[in-house]
Length: 86
Image (cartoon, rainbow, N blue to C red; front, side, top):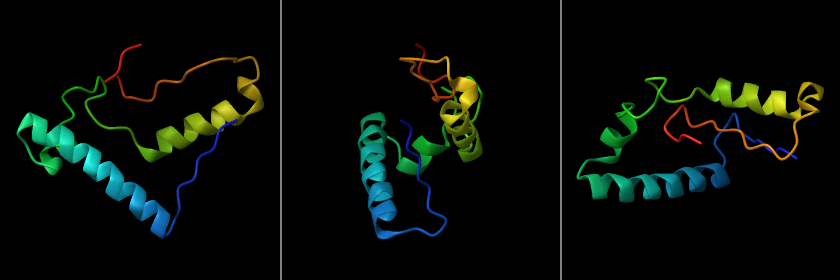
């Protein structure tokens, strides 16, 4: 089962999630001695040379939920843009 929810209008829960993510990014940024904005702007670790687009994540989720992916079982889909090699 795949669940993907991206609100077109930011709701309170979505905004809280963003706030929590920013807190996580802040810890990584602090450890690296940079700001959160500098951390998020750095795409050097991505094989693609950029972060993922929301449409790419949505397209992948749509494929995995479709009949075309029916033969896939116990599969992990890596959407890290190459920053995590598996």
